[in-house]
Image 1 (cartoon, rainbow, N blue to C red):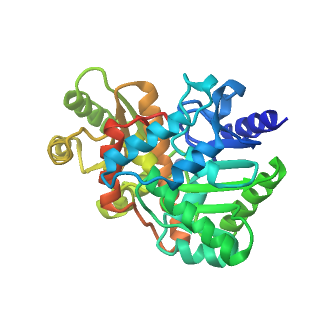
Image 2 (cartoon, rainbow, N blue to C red):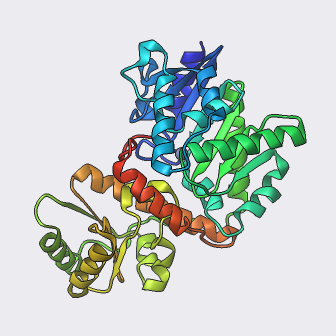
Length: 368
Ligand SMILES: [Zn+2]
């Protein structure tokens, strides 16, 4: 019964393109001393009973009490070893979500974690924290940015304990700045209610919504851009063009594009590269591409072309499609954030931390 409910709502939320993109988000349920949590790399939309990993809740709780090394790499490696050791013996071939510890912190039976653009319009905005207070009162926890992984789990644990001490009740909704939302409940209905309450309240405050209606069609200028991109990236790359009204609006000038030149959430770093490049013409692209490559060490995955829209360039069609989808997600966040004081990007030190973490870590792209 618990397992069926978990699978059902995972598939339901996972199939909603407004809530889940590119395998983002994860879910869990508690059954006595066992946590069933989404396996890393398994998409919510298609997950079945086998896609969840059974974990020992006592061992997971013990991880939160341990002393780990101060060094980032050593700490995360040691915590990951302990996370893997908390799998039940039957689960040794599976990999639990990297956000498993956060799921186990909630005492409620079911937990849903998502990165929806609408919610991130609030969590990635200059006045987000005060607006959340105004919209939801003290019932919603706000978590300020910090290093992902073990550090984030510890901070959430402390904030949840503090909330319980002050209010006498367990937090059921947690907003993570520049990241997403956790919702907990005793039933699927409770999750539904809490999510629609959050979404409804955010929607009620929006002064502007994104417009993805077609605007710039492929033309002679996009063709010239494509030729330059092919020449710069070489064989084996796949280029997609996005010319919606919204993309064209952001591409009007480098000032208009500013909200998109830094990442809002780790998803944008993972799938779009941390820093897109803005260029004024096919002729200017060579120099812009090279300066990005020498400054950052990688070829940009997103090229914003002045007056047109943007190009997503990756090693495969699937990766380009995901980059395009994720960059549209960043656009949505940028537009929604205007209703809450304007965009608030990830801090540069955290962006660098995630770039390094991603480069060598276990998440590597699809695994959430
Ligand atoms: Zn997340």
